[in-house]
Image (cartoon, chains in turn orange, brown):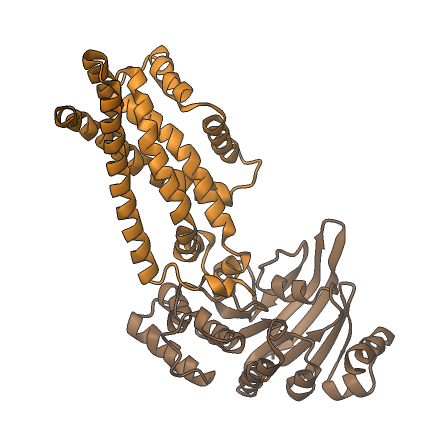
Length: 223
Length: 240
């Protein structure tokens, strides 16, 4: 058991680097596009492109999305390293969901907040940045925590393109020693510890947002 | 001296005509109350003045300058909303100080001092550090008035400022508005508070179906209503 654990630690490292890199790209990208989408009319070409992205990600299994990158990119003459393809697939997938989270959060801020800032003389961009996004942020924390753990778990599917991350390594070990249940217990434990650790960080962040007042005053929307 | 001149303002929402060619003049320091049945275009009219609604037709000149630069216009025209629309994540002080700081370039200390002075003026000294959720409706609306005043506007627009308030809080908001008018602020107030109109207005306009159909000083407005539709309206709201 311990031996399996030790052998799975380096691949866990790759899983962590893959997910955290993808997260660091997908979150700002998804939220920026989500906020942009909330501002655009449905018929704007950029809005249609963003919607197409979201529909593709929601409508296809992640396995297909990973293969799409793995097989289609080379056809377009692009041959990035495996790691980049892996991160790319996770970003494609996760940003697709985070666009929706960001869009919904921006849309959920009452129209009166826009009008108050615009009436004072802020332009739309400053209003979005200064008043709307901070309020949208508090509405995003819950869905974002979900998305985070989804992203980490989705990284296990990258094993299909031979990235030697946690799941791929576990597969390799168990097919060699044939102790499937032992390996799978250790693998599951490692995923759990990683996701649990990340969720602790996220909760701390949520508490900080709340202490700084960014999350306060939801009640005053009621009237 | 004329502060605001609006000519031929028109606005449609789909097939509904909210404004049907409205002309309006306001003198500097004048307090104008606009009333009328719901759907008559009162709110649309004042929302067109600071262009929260873009009129389909018509011209607006404020202070001799046609309203070209949207942000510049809005910085000089304060607005108070029915639902207060305070920023819930900011304290009362920050709600007031943020626009002067970000838009007029005041330092944090200057903006905070301005906010404190305005809070004092609306009888809310000591509430500066509270978030809106910790304030009553009447207090929130007074912070909202202070927030608009912090930009030192030449004109204040009030869009049914007491309609969302519990009855016992209406007075404290109206008192602030009366005082503001007495201090020489030019104001356009959309309200159903006829007591306020009688007490504080220089003129009262009555709107019906997207037009201003009557406009008169308070005494004439109430005692000799110049339009049959207005007679019915006053019967309805004063008759109970």
